[in-house]
Image 1 (spheres, helix red, strand yellow):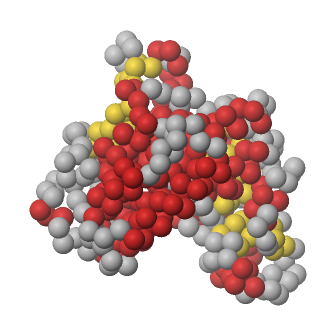
Image 2 (cartoon, one colour):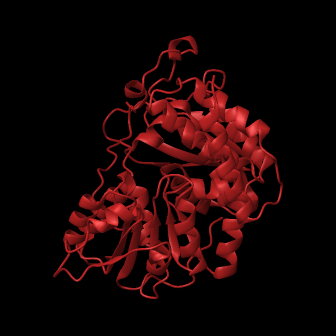
Length: 394
């Protein structure tokens, strides 16, 4: 299980948001705004290239620092924040400098893709409480990341709705009493479709998720079920589970966010309307629970909840996730990098929807596997897999 904080939270928790302009970042700032300065204060904001939105956020929340990964975007900020007290940090070490500041207690890591690993790593190295929304951190380097957290006395609190649900449900028993965890999946926009139905899927169709509002990358991952594949790998390392203890069920209503079954047959689930602000809030205030901006689940009204097994024949990405979870080593880095590029190429109209799992399978099978890689070795696999996927043709 993730490490727990060793002391109660301070009255005001200084928070750094990595990926501030993305979907999770904006939801995080919504939670902070609702707090009205009682418990949460934005210390730092980081984004890749969305400088205009980042400036608007900086003017509203008045953090101590902001950073932009794109040098050209950073150059646009010059003079824009004069008189606000907000300082722009730039350069390759800017994020590390921001998350390592002694004033910072919590870091919300929401950068999309493997790029989010660097900021998460720096925050854990500094011993911070990390609210982790970047699943790729654990997909790529799960054992190394969890070992780093233990060595540095850092804390990892999950923000993915499924892993937050599991984290909460696990508190109903002891680790030795856990039989299995069951991650729920909405099934995405193509639930019930056949492979033939998906031959001519357009990016616009794949982006129309039925229950969640997300960025383009995660929306496509949800359509292919690759998102669930990555979450399976994340759960394995985050909770220290054996591969046979993890299962997936399709639950289209997205009300039951995941479940834990104990050895006595009891199944504990966490339920709420689909709103990412709730798991974000849970991680930012942990170990406390507070009133927040989310709608409540009204069980006085009729509800019907459906559960069904996933269709792994139509959506083979899920099986790739289970395979990578069992193999460990460099397999996660290869799969994740291949998928990131495959999604880019699909959105650009260069490959078809059904090519995504085929391309990822090809790269995974041809990479040089290492069962106990270093962090540098994982980055080399990441770079190789991206190059291979750019060259891949159906």
